[in-house]
Image (cartoon, rainbow, N blue to C red; front, side, top):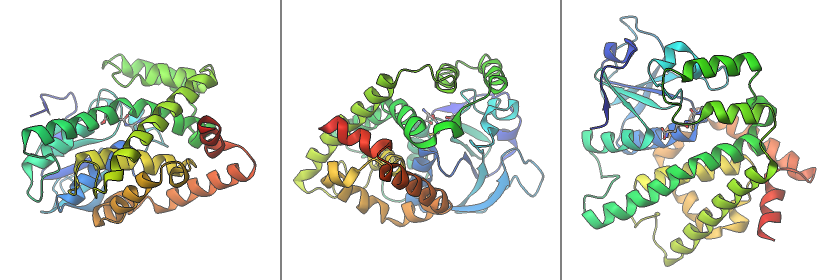
Length: 306
Ligand SMILES: N[C@@H](CCC(=O)N[C@@H](CS)C(=O)NCC(=O)O)C(=O)O
């Protein structure tokens, strides 16, 4: 099991039951929340991410304690969080004092530790095919970051030079496995050429095209008629890009129909969208205004596919 041995922070060891360190709008955390929902585990109390008072540490049965690590307030770039997750990203999961990192490993853990229908097929061949789709999604996670920052978050996500120094100092304690330092330096000083963002967008477009074709055989979900970890990974990419204005329905109609099926599931409605609806609507409204002004991601995708 991908359990993290002896994390520097005393917080994980103090927690009983399930606790998720997450952010409502982060795709990497959304896929874990989706998986929790599919396992019949619902969001419970909200606690500060670093709360360890006696009333904060215990989770109720069948529920997980929500510990929001605000990516807007930069909670993830603090010493306290870096001692929980050395890469300073969400999500992180604690179950009965044990810490698990990496959304793929966390979902794998949940799938084995909790009942319900499996998210990872038990059959060897189907398992391999499913995990290879997940690996592809993992690699493209970097592309989602580039595209959603450039066309979605804009200036809001830029760091001051003081914040970047703080990030670089904290990153020295880990291996900066997510390459946040390099990314934020380039992004905040606007030194990443536009062609880099367009390349990432092209990679996502190609992958969406491939999935769109595969889904044409009429299967309900990405790998079969059963929902799986692959749906958890890919649907959050679609959600994020829709929020940035990507015209998914027009460019990849079969993929969009699949996304709607995943979106309708109670786990998506409750655990992914639950507290994310307002931000979701705000992003979509912003994207509509940009389209109206002849700018934004919608235009970039149309140009790319022309
Ligand atoms: N490989 C990690 C990636 C985690 C990740 O990159 N999380 C993003 C949110 S989707 C994050 O926390 N980013 C912090 C930032 O962009 O500053 C996983 O799958 O858990």
